[in-house]
Image (cartoon, rainbow over all chains, first blue to last red):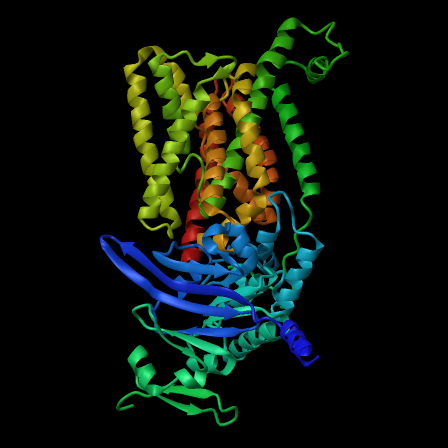
Amino acid sequence: MTVDSKLETARAKPLVATVLEVRGLTVAYTTGKRAIVALRDVSLRLAAGELVGLVGPNGSGKTTLIRAVTKTVVPAGGEINLCGDNVTSLSQAEIARRVAVVPQEPLLPEAFTALECVLMGRTPHLKLLQNESAPDFEAARRAMARTDSGELAGRPVGQLSGGERQRVVVARALAQDTPVLLLDEPTAHLDIGHQASVLALMRALCRDEGKAVLAVVHDLTLAAAYCDRLVMLRSNGTVAAEGGASEILRPELLAAVYGAGVDVFPHPRTGSPVVAPWVEGG
Amino acid sequence: MAAPSAEGSGVVRPPPLPRLVLGCAALLAVGLVAIAVGPANVPLGATVRILLSHLPGVDLTDDVPLAWQNIIWEIRLPRVLLAGVAGATLAMAGATYQGVFRNPLADPYLIGVATGASLGVTIVVVSGMDIAAYGLSLLPLAAFAGAITAVVVAYGVARAGGAASGTTLILAGVALSALLTAITAYLMLKSTTNSVTILSMVLGGFNTATWVKLAWMLPYTIPAAVVILAHGRILNVLNLDEQQARQLGVDVERTKLLLLGAASLAAAAAVSVSGTIGFVGLIVPHAVRLMWGPDNRALLPMAIVLGATFLIGADLVARMIDEPSEVPVGIITAVCGVPFFLYLLVRSRVSAH
C-alpha cells in the first residue's frame, strides 16, 4: 500500500518538463577577416512554468542566444533542444509554433494597424492560402487585452509611441500561442509602470499557463524582483553565474562582470536584492 | 504626419470586394472606350456588334464592313488587351518588389528589371536567333534572364551598401539601368537591320500588338500571378524585418526567391511584348495603398485591376493626343509617374528623419 501510494505520487507529480535546453553553444560572427565569438560554450535549461532572466553587459551575446534558439544564426558548435527536438531538425514554422520572440527595437510597417500587426503572430498557425478566422482574431484580442493595448487596435503603428509599439509586439508574441517566450529587453521603451506590468504579466503566464519565459532584462533590480532565476553572461560570451537573484547578485561578481561599482541591499518592503551603482566622487 | 486620432478610434478597413467590383467596372468601361476610339471612325454600335459576334452562335456583322471588323478585332482589341495585361503585370510586380524589398520606391523600371529585360530581348534580336518555336517565344525567357540578373545585381549592391536605406536600392537600380540602356543603344546602332525593333523596345508601346504577342506573354504572367496572389498575407509579414519574419515562421530566403522570381518573370514577359514602360508599378500600388491600406491580400488584386485600367487609359492618350501620329506610351506614364516618384522620395526622406 505504502509502496503503491509512493508510486502513485511519483506518477501524479507533474514532471518539470525542460522545454529549452542549450548545451555548449558557441556562436561566432565573421566581420571581414576577423572572427568574433559572441557566445562561448553556453549551457542553460528552461523549464515549463519558469521565468528566467538573462542578464549581462552589452555585447555579451544575449540577443545572439535568442537568434540561435530561433535558428536565425547558425551556431559554430553545441546543441539546442526545443520541446524535445533539436532546432536544426525543425522548420522555421515548427520553431515559430514553439517559441515566440519579442525582439529588441522591432521594425514595424507603419501603415498597418496594431491589430493587423498582432494578427501577424498567427502566421505559423496558418496555411499559405488560409486567412485569419475567428479563433485567430480571438487570440489577438485576448493578447492585446493582456498587454493593455486593446484600445490601440485600430491605430496605424506608425502613430504609436515606442512604449505602445513595444506592447503591441508583446501582444503579437502572446497571440503566437507558444509554450516558450523569449524576450529581448521587453522593457526597454516602457515607463516604470509598464515595465513592472510586462514582467508581472510574464510571471502570471508562467504560473497560470505553464509557459517558459527567458527574458533579457538590463535592470538587475527589476530582474531580481520578477525572475525565478538569473543567468548572467560575461562580455566574452561565457556564463558567469546562474542561480537565484540573491545568490548571484553579489557586488564582487557584478564588479567583475560589469566593471562597475555597485551596492546590493535588500528591498525594504520585499527583501529582494536592489542593485544600486555608485560613482566615485559622485 | 497624419492627424492624431482620438484614443480608441482608428482605422476600420472596409471589405475589399465592393471596390474590386467597381474597379472591374471601371476597367471594362475604359477598355470599351479604348476599343471604340481610334483614327478610323468605327461607330460604337458597330464596335459592340463586332465584339458580340465573336461569341459562339452570334452573328450581327451582316452590314458591317470587313475593314471595320479587322480594325476592331485584329488591331484594337489585341492592343487594348495587351496594354491591360502589361499594366496589370507591372502593377503586380511593383507591389511585390515594394513588399519584398520593404521599399516604397521599388518599381520594375527603377530597380533595373525592365532595362535588364529589354537588353535580354535586344541580344536575342541582334543575334538573329529564331525567336519563336512551338508557339512559344524565346523573347520572354531572354527578358527574364536579363531581368533577374539586374535585380540580383541591384539588390546585391544595395545590401552591401547598407540595406537600411531605401534609396540605395533605387540608386543602384537607376545606375544599372543607365548602363544597360547604354549597352542596348550600342547594340541598336551596330545592328542597322533591327534598329527599329530595338528602338520600339526601348521606348515602349503597344502599336505592334497582336494576338500572338498576347499568347506569348500569358504563359508566364498567369503562373506568376497565381504565385504572388497566394502570398499576399506572407508579403505583409515580409514588411517586418527579416529577423522577425523568420521568427514568425516564414522561410524568408525561399519566399523571397519565389516572389522575386515570379515578379521578375511577369515583368520580363511584359517588357518582351511591350518594351520598357516605367512607373506603372510605382503609381498604381501606391495609389491603392494610400486609399485602402497596406494589406497585400486586398492590395494585389486591386493593383492588378487598376494597373490594367491605367495602362489602357495611358495607351489611349498616347494614341489620340497627337493624332494621327502616336506618342510612345512610356512618355505618358513617365509624365504621370515622375512627379509622383519625387513626391514619394520627399515624403520618405521626411519620415526617415
